[in-house]
Length: 130
Image 1 (spheres, rainbow, N blue to C red):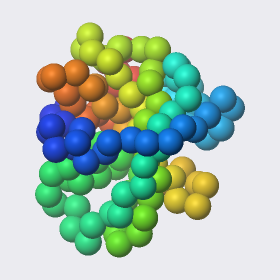
Image 2 (image 1 turned 180 degrees about the vertical axis):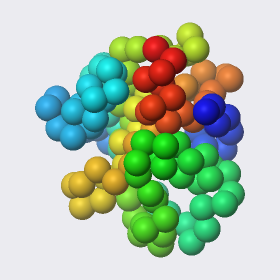
Image 3 (image 1 turned 60 degrees about the horizontal axis):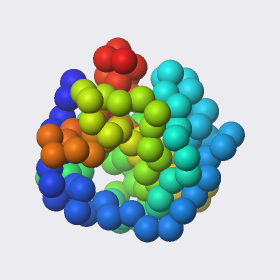
Image 4 (image 1 turned 30 degrees about the vertical axis):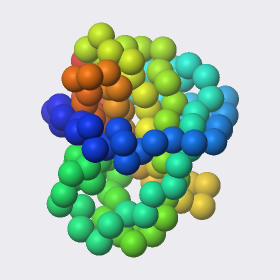
């Protein structure tokens, strides 16, 4: 199911820093869904709000839950979001995998199309569409 990504999400997830995922959990997760990382990632930390009912957190939670992750257990905690460009393109736009980690463990993941139309997608949706 497509969940539209608001411009606010793109602004809220301004990513800084660099990370490599050569054979790490992000690369393995991408491969599990038939995706391929196209270089290193950029990371930022975000604190998960108490309520996941507002944009963009409702969209992120929905996409993560479809992939078997549940961010509700991390409310009030700081998580690291790392954005990795993908070699694959969903709906013709530049596409990134967002891997969410806490203390080095993968706790969530979803895919974002970063063009004007944008979009937040679950990994199972992307796997079906590609």
